[in-house]
Image 1 (tube, rainbow, N blue to C red):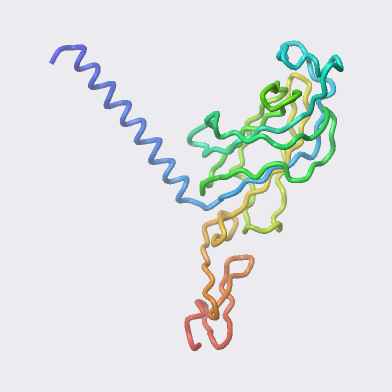
Image 2 (image 1 turned 60 degrees about the vertical axis):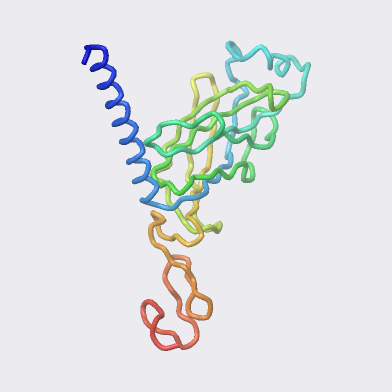
Length: 221
């Protein structure tokens, strides 16, 4: 076998091995928990002193009063082993208003696809329309330490106080939700209710119905 052929074979083996390792760890991350939704809201926006140098000329009219512009959040969620999002995974929030804002209602609910160790990329964008937005600030967030809970509004929000060198101060609040049948701080305890036998409480424990008894509600009836 010629030298260039050996080198090509070695390169292909290395590429396949690296791809296999990434897929393996993606599988582990997905099996470890069942977070299916990440909710995002803004607690504070202060971009009134943002450095305008370097901002796209497409939105220059926003600062001269020649066009009406709105701020929005653009965000995506990804498993940390992948390190970033693909461009098509970003979601854009409704318009929030200007560059100095207080707490908003829920802005985005992002799919997490059942992963446990999650990261988020959150961008503050500004412009006159969806297709003409400048990125004022861009942050990477580690969500792996946040508590998780069932799909109801009973788990506290995690707060991220963020500052960008350009002059943006952003306070974000994030909440993680387990899938419908998963419970516990890591979404690893599963409880599937059975009609007329038991239902699942907020911690994922079975609560027996009627004449059913026992820890698993499988005695009597």
